[in-house]
Amino acid sequence: MRLLLYTHALLWSLGDTTKLSPRAKVAIEERENVYFISVASLWEIAIKISVGKLQIGKPMEAIPAELERMGLVLLGIDVAPLALLSKLPFHHRDPLIGS
Image (cartoon, rainbow, N blue to C red; front, top):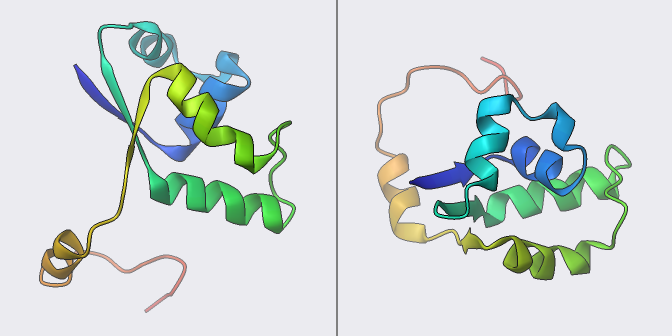
């Protein structure tokens, strides 16, 4: 199975695994699965650290090696999908931006 870990699941995997649901914990521990993490999640983590909303107990520079040790595949951001995203129908407003 191929799994994309969202930021919170990644953080819980790196730290307090008791916060993961039993199903998520089993899926993450299954070594036959392929795990992906977006570079956007690392960006989000770095921002949260910089504004004091997150402490991860290790330097941010250590995270890529930790991801590799965990067998996670880092997904970059490509411009082509962003161009497609700009043409998708508008279904809801961004709660951070407002109306």
